[in-house]
Amino acid sequence: MQSCEPEAKFRFTIAPPTGTIASLFAPLLSLFMSTLSTQILSRLSLADDFLSGEELCAAFGVTRSAIWKHIRLLRREGYQIDAVTGRGYRLAALTGRAVAAEVEPFLATRCFGRNLSYHEVTDSTNIQAKMLALKGSAEGSVVVADSQTGGRGRMGRRWLSVSGKNLYFTIILRPGVPSLRVPQLTLLVAVAIHRALAQFVPELQPKIKWPNDILVNEKKICGVLCEMQSEPDFTHFVVVGLGINVNQLAFPGELEGRATSLFLESGRTHSKPELLAGFLNQFEPLYDRWLGEEDLGFVLPYIEEHSLLQSRVVYVEQFNRTINGTVTGIAKGGELMLASEEGGTVLISSGEAHLSKSN
Ligand code: BTN
Image 1: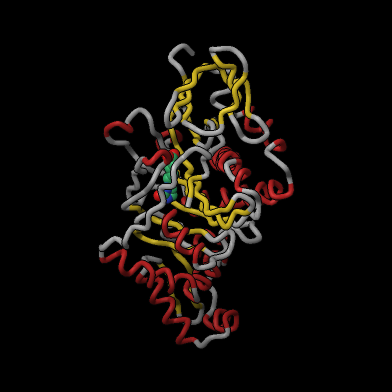
Image 2 (image 1 turned 180 degrees about the horizontal axis):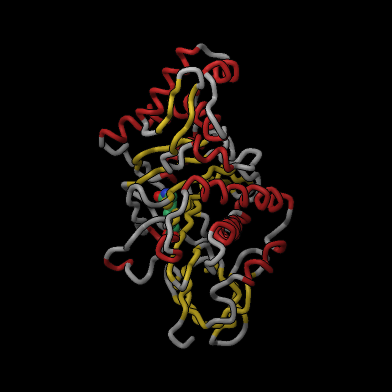
């Protein structure tokens, strides 16, 4: 398993499942939630009024007692479902968790997000997604966690993953392209999340920071970690993990002043299921188009328009060196184009870019 960054070393280790009670029950819970309960919840969430027991029985071809059993399971899961004799069932409130039944009503995709597994807590959604991909899970499958005990960032860093506030998820892709093209995916993901955020919170002015961060007011609101398993001519699968700071109220220690959330920037809380679906709705058509193209040419104008780094003086940290220069654009292959201090243009395919103090 490799990072999608060309020069990065392989860092994928499979951690043992974390040992809390919640994590032991999580697979069972998501199994229940992915079957009839999920379908019932989805149906209830789309209905304007009560749905009768008969309607639900007919819709799913099951008995009244089966429906009742799943209503009880959903209530145990925290869903407020009213049951009134003679009228049926009505969903009084959703939980706001990014489970399949709460994401599905907002999805406009053909396949992305249609198979979604949810963990209250897990080690890392990238690790879970990789295990699913190895077992043959379909393209577009998504793993979501409410919190992660081993959330991973780029360059071997940790990704703080508190519970109840943010979105942590990973999507499995199976692009049958040469592995050289895969790093382009990170910029494509950045475009999709940028568009979703712009649509979801129109007053924000998010910026894309090459290669795959999203910042608001120069503070990080979203990070992307792509990892792949491939041969030179063929990519077996890619797992694309996103951490989006949605409703977090404060950031501790060294993150203070460097990270932000949608809540902090907009002053209101936001729906995680809707944002996840919004991202997937943006990403699927971009990805489909990218598969049929040679490169990122078709999104370059969008990236350059919303780039934090365009025409700015930066330094790029790589594993063994730092490069200084002024950003002149993004190449079709996704590389950062830099007018270097030594003269001439250099194409940079990996690393972490920072604005220089001289800006
Ligand atoms: C970065 O900016 O360093 C990338 C952060 C990516 C974090 C997400 S959270 C969901 C997924 N699972 C992980 O362990 N990491 C990614």
